[in-house]
Image (cartoon, rainbow, N blue to C red; front, side, top):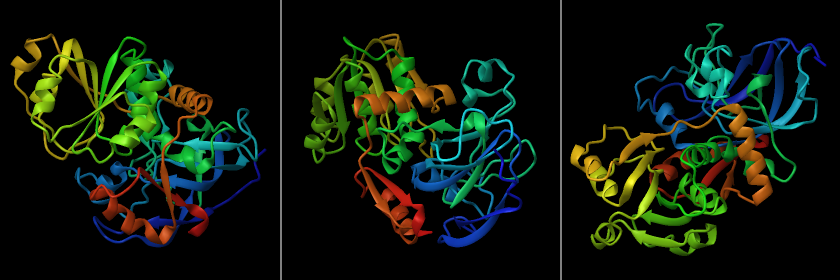
Length: 352
């Protein structure tokens, strides 16, 4: 039922300009439409792309900005036409909050490729012309088709990073048919990488972690890795030449693309998940030598996100998190940029 919430106001963490400190402010959410869900946000994860946007690294920032797209909470009201959610349901919201619902990609459950243009949960202009504000907030109003159920087996704090980091790593595993007999390398053992290892291992692949140093070797084995190499060791790329069917690159920095292509088997693919600030460069001969491919993967649709949550709950896959209070977000951003987190920060919204 709809509780006739009007002029829904909520406390948020916002940045007034690029790289400015966070402030606690008040914003107004839209009134509930017939197909809307009102969510009390309990936890919101911090993603590297939050930082990119808050710092205007891509030049598209609109301020004041409320980041956050790893939202976990509880339904407190529903619109009159909502049938899939009820008050008290444990739910999540990820990267997107609207799409056209009519194009070929929306119809097949890949809203991230919507031809009209998917509406991102924050720093995006909705179809109604209004700017979207994200999950560093006490409450949010979201169209029901962009809300997912969080299984009872997943703690809400642990579930929140799965709404971006989880689906970002799960989706390419499914698309490139990771399973028994496949050799998969994960580049980077950070917020994305430690989940990618778990998914690849659970799906039955032989998993190798490629990290700058040996510092996370034991943790990688604990997440399910079979092998671990330091990319700072010049011998690594020589030893691994032609080994992998799939390389999942989770880092946001530029890499030596040719070196990584050299360790792909024939018909192997290097899939990029991170978003470096500068363009990558590579030699076409690195592809030519083994019919290799370079690709990228952009999260997943709502249906696949629900599948990922159910898969994670069933198989005990969970991010390692550090829960922080609302007044620690500036410090958390600084720590992410210097890779000082094991492995995802999650904001406890009761502290806002």
